[in-house]
Image (cartoon, rainbow, N blue to C red):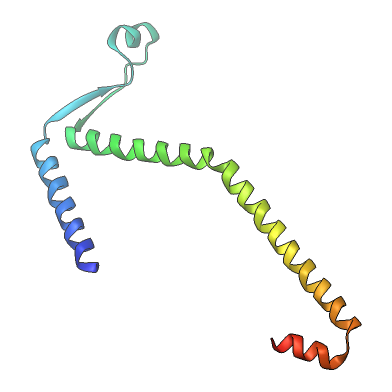
Length: 116
């Protein structure tokens, strides 16, 4: 299984490197479209290689997706926590009731029940 993982990572690395080499051209990213930038006076731009823009977009999309999913699953995690607390409370109650039941019995019967 470890070799399959290494083979997958090597293949992924080769693919990403080939994409980066094929997209080395420089592109200019503008904060706002030109008419809006002239109107607002905020004409910020940066020149980056295209592969940086592509990989940055992929990473940003993954991070947004992870955050969105984490927020969406909050209800499920809260319900699981409540269920776990209820389970622990029920286990404590069962132990307490078994202890009371064994106090009422003979010592010999309690030992036999405990052994089974």
